[in-house]
Length: 191
Length: 265
Ligand SMILES: [Zn+2]
Image 1 (cartoon, rainbow over the protein chains, first blue to last red):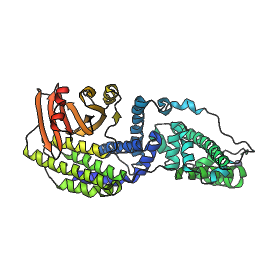
Image 2: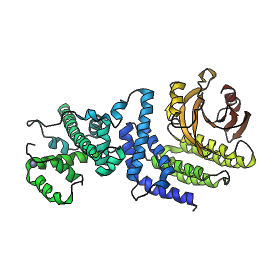
Image 3: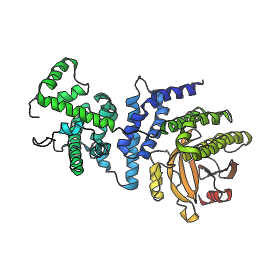
Image 4: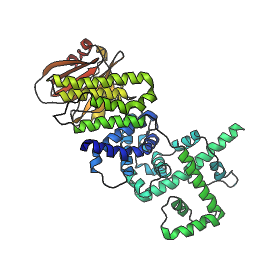
């Protein structure tokens, strides 16, 4: 095997193991299946070209950083093209939006626990995630779906670790609220 | 949830971020206090809902990635003295493509086979002809075929030339000519970045009826040259140099019609 082929196999072995993670992140950022796959392909080509410069055993955070950068560039292109994505809510410095109301369940409402313990329709979970500000969404996705540490999430999203923690807490509060609401509404409609 | 406990610590515990000395105390808090217990099970329930909602790619993505990486590796490895090995590479790619075929059916398979044959044909052709760089012809054909393999052959769709041209700014160190040729029967579909001749280049996609045309443009010093043509396995290629730029047009479009492009650009 020549050195180029060896490098390719090495990259494939390490990088393809994280393809689902790369796709999931891309999907939740660009919110469109075909675009997400293009983002992954573009990101993997970039990653491969830069692969020789990477050190360390776990390339997942590095790979996801590239995916995220490519996804944001796509969003800005798509925004110019179609004007559907509110870019300022997408950019990392949109933190002033974080001062939303903090969620508290009214004591007589059905408990969030009861609602959440059932198996919610995936469409409801998707809708609840959609309603999150993108900075919250990417943070909770990296933690709960991709199981990354706060430190890795901070690196990938270029945010201080304290910001990651506060985004995560707010994302959880907001998701619990939205999801409980959506499930309750669904249950009412079903009756 | 009315207890006075610090619930943020429960989240830290579940995230595996709580320092070891505190773990026992918080674990106890989460089991002894009813409010904290409920909070913990909500977090876990939410986690379960989110994990189940993870988005998964189409089964073909892994194969498409491998294929693109293969091309990329071949292009990166190729110096000016690229060894011409017709057949072998195409055979490797065919092996690779099998799962993709299964997913996309026989029609796609036929198209792919034709594309791969033409890659092999180019490799043969470049051995026979002195032109504007045989590697370029290979890269141009490979890039065009690659774009046909994807759902989208463009990264930026065209509303008019003003959406495409600025898109290249910041992605390339030069500005390609982007012309609206709709009046001449070439509809600008959009643009993408591609990899030809060892560098990132602008690729424009035009449509003429149902025929897709890739037009590659990059800076090249030297005098203007007359268009040179080649036909490989159903694809027509034309290359010329003009205004400090190298142009390559490729399509399955009739060569007379494709031949109009050099005059229009
Ligand atoms: Zn408590």
